[in-house]
Image 1 (spheres, rainbow, N blue to C red):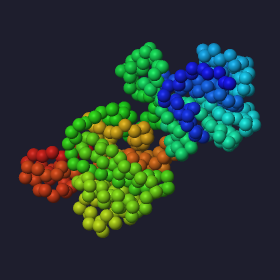
Image 2 (tube, rainbow, N blue to C red):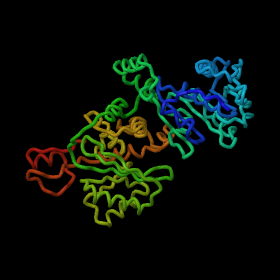
Image 3 (cartoon, helix red, strand yellow):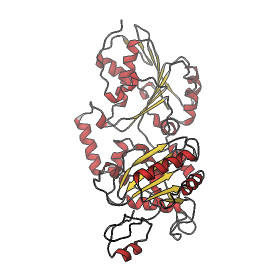
Image 4 (cartoon, rainbow, N blue to C red):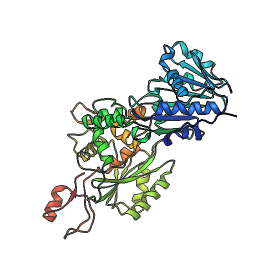
Length: 441
């Protein structure tokens, strides 16, 4: 009978031993306890049954570069006498579980192909793993029921394994973020260090302690600190009309997204996949009738044009406005196209006390877009396909939010203003009412 050992795993790490997934991808900042939890979970499983466990990293010049020492320390901590710690491997004397340690780059790349019998691979510091190394490793781990465990602190937005596995995970991949505030075993000293860093340098805090990647470039359009602040803020009674942005999926992996915004508060998103033009139009009709928005701004590029035609034929032209991201900007002297114009207005929105739902995918989409200028000095954004290559998916949610800034929209009339909802300029509104409130975002 296997020895009963009291190894305690923090709740965020229980899926390591309870869920059946091919890929288990854990990431986050310092103090989250990823390495300790992975070591403890593997030792726990290695006590229960015979396993071949490979602990790998991109470069391993010697055994000192591996997690060999950490596993040895945890074995001593729990007094697991079943395990024999050797110079280059660890073996369970009772059931013959075996831990081996490998580097993936250069001289080990071909050797790793012989590891067909491995049950579990633990990739530590996975932010350093190259695409080439992954392409060698992944097909090698082919035993039925085998798993690949990944622990990493994200470095850049386009870390290879993040783009390949975590940015757009399939049903066989578990992706979980764990930070110091999720770890019940995190020491008070570490918590104090984290809070001190937060007060001193919010960007360093986001990278070191929250596991956010370093900016891919210094020319990001929207300040990631402002996005993060908006995601922590709660606006109780937002002022402004209800506006909906609808970004219609163009390709198989893209999503159709509705974004609802009321002034300084983003009310939320509704995301759909693999919907036909008719189905999307039906969803839009139902939303208009239920939510009573002042405007629904619809991306008419690609298949969105078909959705717009159906809505117009159905009598919704009073509410629906078709927007083409590539068309001429309203302020043509400042922006190369409507996409740049709407995103820049969205950037202005983040300068105010705004409220945005907390969502890591949305954060990545908003923070990813880089700005540049055309030969006329007008603002233009990085192409969507380029962003998709870096973050692993299309910016569907961010584009839906940007669409809500297509035009300034008046609040439904009170105090003698006409009851008809219509798009007006600031000057028109003040001329008509003498004083008024408008949604400037």
